[in-house]
Image (tube, rainbow, N blue to C red):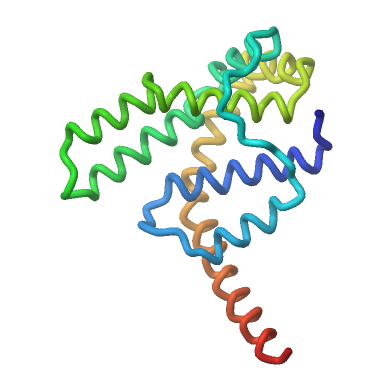
Length: 182
């Protein structure tokens, strides 16, 4: 199934928000913020599938695409999140975090995460679109874009997270007020 451009933009936004949350310094995510994210994405009908994707040309190209994407990828987000959690945690050992990181980078968790991502890519992109993205990421502009995107994302993260948090709080107050009227 090939998604419309608007749905693809929403999916990119969702991944961006997930990146913001996973890479933020906040210790907890507000339930209202999670509900807003669910509302924004409610019309996107993607299926999380942990099964191994077919070993066809589309899957092979998706794996190439994921390798071309540079430093802004789920593997680095996961690694940074685990290292951040470790730096704040005084209860679990270094060995625990080393083993967790190992499982997420090359172990069983890594394989399940990769299956999920490849299956999601398969739902969103055609083989032709994957080919076009691979070609783009091989160009000087494509390589520059990922470096710049990482810088932009890292710079914008605190401000955007704060705006989302404030908006969520305001919406929660507004909706509680509305429910009292009814």
